[in-house]
Length: 202
Image (cartoon, rainbow, N blue to C red; front, side, top):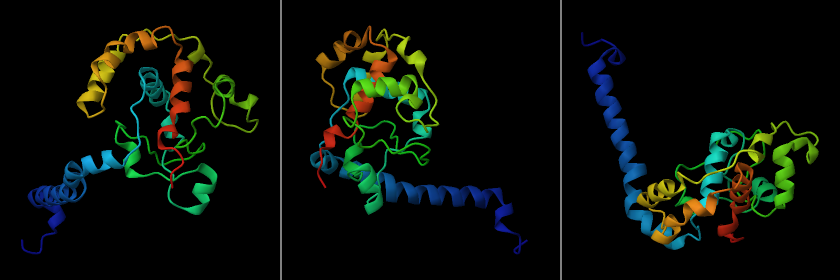
């Protein structure tokens, strides 16, 4: 019995898992509770507008985050191609974060204002019209589907509970700020916001 492989013991496996998870919590999660105020003080991140919040949700629902990362590593090659490298303080209002791990398409961390709204509209409608070799799918239906903003207020309230500093006025006006916009307009607004609140600091 003493020579029994410990991996065959459910009890030992559970205890080992609890120990490893507890260690991970102590090392990775717990310090963040004490470091949050420092991150906020160091960060130039700004909360997304109501329309940008809806655009971010469309970005997620259409699976954009599975082909595009939002994490520029501090490597010369990446900085030259994608711009300023990512910092922990950049993502204090990101729930969930969209760092990603697969770059079928380019990293979008610093995409904002690199192209015009018109360019983005053409690109979303048919990527081949601006990038002939693109393998990105087209999203023409985003220009036909209109947002009613019915859930936007609830989304901002939920984000405020997580620490995003929305005030009552922003929350109350969220539905009207979104109502009547197409999904394409919301997505473009979100894409144009990327990296803009971080400036060009190095």
